[in-house]
Image 1 (cartoon, rainbow, N blue to C red):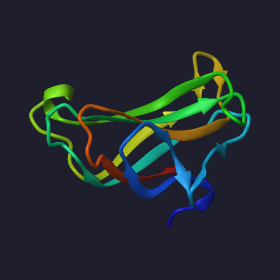
Image 2 (cartoon, one colour):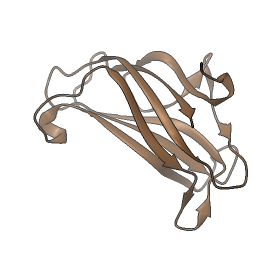
Image 3 (cartoon, helix red, strand yellow):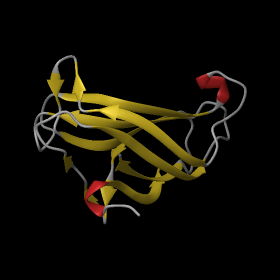
Image 4 (cartoon, rainbow, N blue to C red):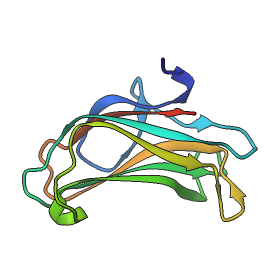
Length: 135
């Protein structure tokens, strides 16, 4: 069961750099002033790898500002894509990816978080995924 308050991105195609949306609205989650440790869960249902140069960097970003107007830091990163770019023996595939995170980095607590996807390479259709936070 997924708590909708911790949903970062609902299912949908991403073909260009974008922050996560839920019901077509930008989604920022407030996790409070203290240290929080958990997991960013990413469910990938489609991923385009046709030209062997595609990279999808899905980040859990943190900020000290509720509107992300300044001080944005990557707290967790999931890189998916073509093996030629990422290294390794196989292209990324559909499925569930679980990435641990903590809201503290270098002594600073980032109480506000969002999902952000950075897309690079020759992209026609992109990647389709949803993302949420869990313990």
